[in-house]
Image (tube, rainbow, N blue to C red; front, side, top):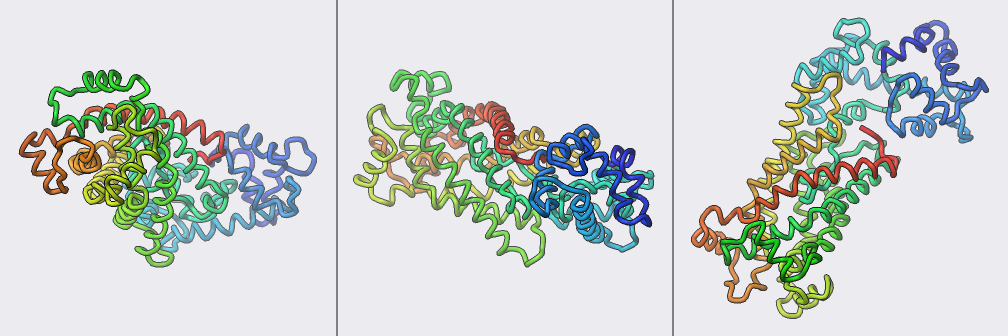
Length: 477
């Protein structure tokens, strides 16, 4: 963006002695497409697009919200000039916060340190890519003029926003609970971008879960009934489900699975924000370890509140046709025959499974993303949604491998009351029983359909998420 911007607007802007009108007048005339002395949002959007300066779909709105003092939907020259003057002051503060040694230049080591302060580890090679995108004179350092010119029309307000776009995760649910919730800047929270992004991710998750629900139900059936018939495989499992309840039975329990997305996401996001504040001092940026701990605690908190819905989902998934008429009938019968405690069967292995899942998921995710940026990124430090989804799918798979035995025991405990003649064992008793009767492979029953749903879930989530972001006006990162 910087090269293009300098080529058409910044020669005049470089004249510091000419005063503000001389610095900004050329730029204003370029954006005032019809020459009527004011810029509306359409002209700004069209002007930036025609000049090859992509800033995201809501960048123009941010500029107008801040700069349109009289709220008439247009920027006159005085408003435009005042906005740029105020914006320069913010960018000056951001520049000084990056310029650690106060020598008037930003170097690769200072870029690396600033990322570390936000809990993001990047290599020297990645830091140099950032410098190259801003550096106009080939010195591999960035002075104030280069920095100001680069961010002249970018409505970021501080160094955290400048850096944070690289760290943003997708917020996409691919059928398994996201370990570390997405993070948002203060500007995104104020503008409402955060809830739009969470909503887009929630809708994508609902569509994805519904599309892959037959594989999810097969996984649960193999986890619960696999030990009774060792011949149960993917083909026989699907045939048995269709024979017992018809094609519609493949989606049994999916309604509850989709219904719990909204409360779980909201609880996890809210709890994550609170745990971050508790684990960091005021003004301190969160690091990787604090992010892991906050994410794990947030996941445990959300699971505690929505766990009865997890039990209901499992019971509905393994139920016979006609055994329950729906979610509320299932809850009523469990409460009547087994008591309130039945809604928390399997809770302990479920909570214990969060730690290995969260640790491995986060570690592998950061490793894969850093590897891509190191070896495949050409002129950006923003991996993009597709790469982040790939990293998320692989890291989630690794996390599931580590925590799957606990997930299997949880599911067995949730459903064992439904199996005639099945002993009602606790977590330790179930582990011993499975190992003695089925061996170590028994701890991974149902993992094949679980892995089979990852790729279609990722593809469906990506397509729906991108369309929902456009419909809801979510900023492209």
